[in-house]
Every structure is written in C-alpha cells, then in structure tokens.
Length: 145
Image (cartoon, rainbow, N blue to C red):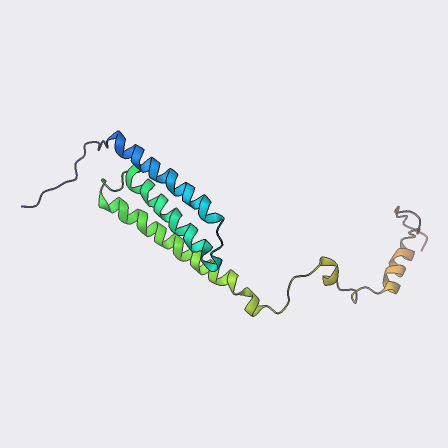
C-alpha cells in the first residue's frame, strides 16, 4: 500500500528554514558581487548564470513551495525554463555568429552615405528650380517657370 504524502492542507515551514534560505541567498549575492571583480575570460557569463540558477532554484523550491507541492507544477515550471533556455541559446547562436556571414562591418554613418545617387549638378538644378537662395534656408517657389 502506497502512502500519499500530498495533502490539501497548507504546508507551513518553520521560520528558521526561511531565515536560513534568506541567509544563503544573501551569501550568494555577496559571492556574485565578489566574482564580478575577477576576470575569468569566457567563463564570466557561465559562472554568473550558475550562481543565478542556484539562487532562483532556492527561491522556487522553498519560497514558492514547489518542493512540497504537486510535482506536476514542478514539471510545468521546469519545462518553461527549459524552453526559455533553448530560445536564448538559439538567439545567442545567431547573434554571436553574424560576423561570419556579413562582410560589411559597421562604420561611421557619414561613410555609409552614397554620393553617386545625386550629383552636384542635380542638387544645383533642384535648388535653381525652387529659387533657393544660398544665404538663407527659406524656399521660394517660382510659379512663372
């Protein structure tokens, strides 16, 4: 005969457990700040994400009571996190490898302007047809032409 440990009664955790988890979270926050000053190269993001994952797991397990609740809720929660991580990884593959595909690198905006489209004569012709004076920005349309 199997014993059902899940009940519909509220699950009350002792205050000492909440304070202990809170102290661990504060300690992990101090570790996060300390580690941020150390250069690990390519592992900086990995270490920060591991610490954040441990902290989020503690919050979900104890403060959200997923450890003591119906395990189906845990499955939904973990599957949502899995799909979120999958989409982030796919996005990172795209953004980290764009330089391999595109030959044009970004530069100053002025360098990207194409001057061949409008020659100086075309611009002067437009200015003459609008009777634009060179000493003012006012545009006067000459209707006699």
